[in-house]
Amino acid sequence: MNSFQLDARLADDSIFITTLPLCQIRLINDRRWPWLILVPMVQDAVEIHDLTEAEQSQIATETSHIAAALKAHTNCTKINTGALGNIVRQLHIHVIARNEGDPNWPGPAWGYGERVEYRESELAGIVKTIQKALAGSAELSD
Amino acid sequence: MNSFQLDARLADDSIFITTLPLCQIRLINDRRWPWLILVPMVQDAVEIHDLTEAEQSQIATETSHIAAALKAHTNCTKINTGALGNIVRQLHIHVIARNEGDPNWPGPAWGYGERVEYRESELAGIVKTIQKALAGSAELSD
Image (cartoon, rainbow over all chains, first blue to last red; front, side, top):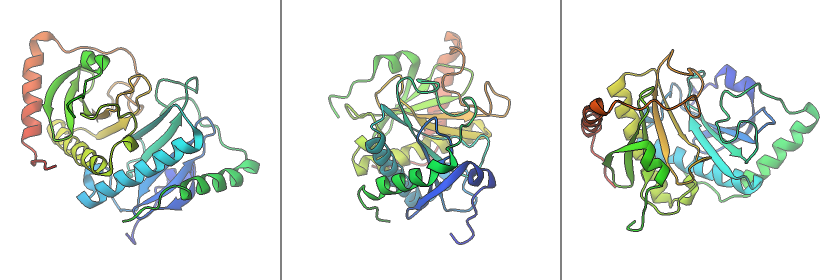
């Protein structure tokens, strides 16, 4: 895991929130939707099936944890999860809180319009709120 | 599991391929992309975190199995997986074979244009080919 390096585009588009046993959790800097990504700290993983079976099970656990916490925090209509990687190949799992009437509902959030960044002044507060929401959920084991 | 009933819209849009220990595997009837879905045979599951931990681990195993088999079979550029459920709430996981230059590449397949059904005359052959491709991969345990 020591050689893991975050893709430069993911680093640019998102803000560090926390780490879980397998994944780095980051907030996509787009205020249109509450949108987190999980990036497994495994060098050269592109597809989910590139992970070991233990890692696959762990990423399922961590994705469910993040999805449940984001749903509880936002009280959204539906969680959307996905692993696309058509643009950035480094494996990353999206967890997005969706609501009826949000931009492009009921279509996907991916590839829709232009990213709208959070205001610099609000970002620290939002990051802290999300860190608290995730920490408030059940602990994860590895 | 006995009370599981497939959503009517999923039934209409897709063709039965096989069952794995947890999920029914179906082919989306859209010839624009090779596109499978996994539907866990669990009544009233909407979000992945509605499943038990054992089921979450099993669905990760089955998704990876289907993704690896579809990638090997199609030799595609990238597998896209996702669980959206904005239209059909019954939990289902998409596994789509994507290639550079395919419709809407590198954007998502979901919600793009209109479904193009397979020809009636080719469907039986395609279903058999996919059944073979999935069966040729490693066995699954539950």
